[in-house]
Image 1 (cartoon, rainbow, N blue to C red):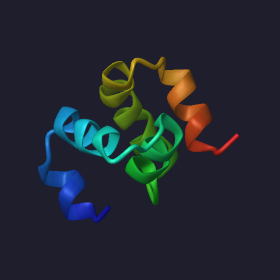
Image 2 (cartoon, rainbow, N blue to C red):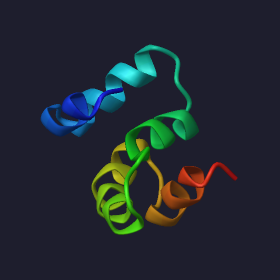
Image 3 (spheres, one colour):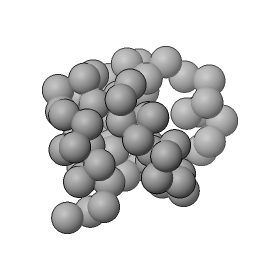
Image 4 (spheres, rainbow, N blue to C red):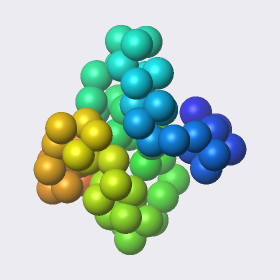
Length: 66
C-alpha cells in the first residue's frame, strides 16, 4: 500500500478493505507499519490495534514479523 493511501484513508476502512481481501492481522500490521520509525509505529499501534482487536504490544510484535 502506498503512503498516500495510509495518510488519507480512515484506519477502520483500510483494515476493512484488507480483511475483505483475505489478509491476516500480521500482514495488515506489516503493511501499515512498513518504513515507519519505532515511535511512529507505536503511535499507529495505539490507534490501529483496537480496530484489529489486538493489544499495542501484540501489534508491535507482529510488526517485527515474529
